Length: 539
Image (cartoon, rainbow, N blue to C red):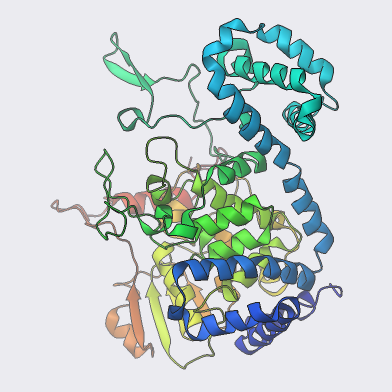
């Protein structure tokens, strides 16, 4: 770890004063890169309301790449970061091929498809032109198209043939099958709100079923959705039209009835298009992703959403609903957001980079650093998403926080709390084998395995490492601890975050009698006793 200035003093950086020193080092680094940019950041911190939304976006977009370089330097991962950036840039020919061949040429000539050669004939010609197509044919085709367009005057016949191949790939059954998994041929479809989930009617059974040819079996409790890969995510990021430059980023701010109005539009299903409830800088994140940055998009996400492991894909999609594309497929923003996190986690020390950005993020105009302890103590009842998010913000403001949770909470190994984690795989477990930690409330016991619960450990770890945070499980608010006993224990404030879903108890006589259980208690018991595991006695 001697090569890393940050890791060599790892535990010291959980103290506010040492993070303040790190912040000063970054300002000096930024000043060396661009003195005017450094002055602009300092002015922004002192008077954030003096800048327009566009000016803030431009400032943060200019600083984020510098922050990426700084973080790579203090963690000593410049080489690994450059490799990750190069891998992203290597995907650009596919995105250019999609733009110039599939969208600009082939899609406009679909009505001519039957006059062209067969797909098999065109595909045979294409195979004779390709190089290094064995491992990645999509990339090989894209690079071929790039070579043709670089000197288009020399390849008019080849460009025409490749265009015809694209047309056949979009129209012929064998062509569609050949490019079924290609990002370059995934084109936006018209949105049909009345048919968001394709179904078919079975008259003999008098019921509907999914319209898929092969039913999806739901056996076992492993993660069922591995998320998009880098190529697919970059395709989504390129699909975005980056509305922040004219304040049309409705995915973040909400979709108004008319430009300039505050009243928000509702979609055909009656859903109000509020956009991201955190006002996350989505367009800016997408722009940085498109440019091939790795850490900068995550830093941009975490300006407004430091708890991003528990948002994004399979958790929330208000941003997608309010996307500027209302009549066709929206940009899959949750996939991009979660990929921004996982791309950093794949780097060496990625867990520590995320953890650092939780506590220190110079792109924020508020809470870019935690404040020193102010002497006040807060008890938070409930350690679900509301409770642990509140705990983070109170810690950033200088409070001491004790969290209590009705679930039994498993302690994290001491080594994880005191030693830096090089590889994210040190934290991950198969979902059908992991020990239920109890931390996370409904995110722990109530969300199914469509979502990766390993992300909860990132939040738990980040909070547990803070010097002014403690958490205790198997403590029932109203039983083990009451309002009165909280004051007797010396707490200055009490926050109740025990669940937003009301009512908490059914209005049925004797529903709390011995042997009767509420649904949430039943779910908690099932999860925490390992009922999802095939070898469990509970199962």
